[in-house]
Image (tube, rainbow, N blue to C red; front, side, top):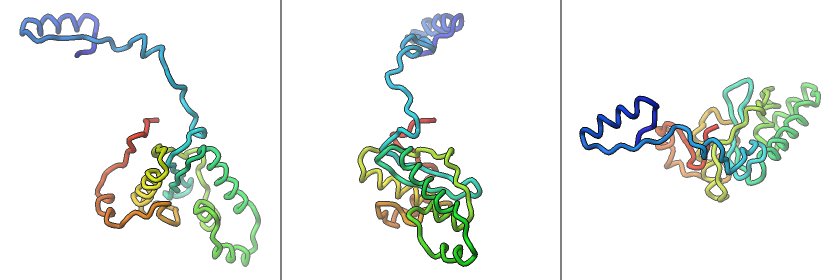
Length: 182
């Protein structure tokens, strides 16, 4: 099947017909493709059941997490905790004491301990998965693949065997089967 190009397609068809090669043509744009959009585009914050990534503005570190609820809700929770911790003034002794405390989120630890800014607007969805167990595995794989660039404290909700490390180090790029191009 060839894409129809006015003037050229007729010539190609005649040449192919001489050699008994059947040719069918299809238009580049169809009315269906132009008019029918069965689903409205969903805002990033409204998406549920996903594995997401939040980068740091000042360094190469990223945080990877998974959520079954709306991504916007989780981002707001992360942001609230980071702002509550980083906005309060510290004396030197309070700052030293805060370095030994562990916050709820590794994002908060990174922002407060290393004096970094989180790039909330660049949060991206890496993959979508409605099954929680599979989503946990995907999160663990993506955290492991992130390696030294990860600001995550742990390896995710699923304990991934280190047997896979060699494979994950050699695989070029992870692309989830449910991921759509942005």
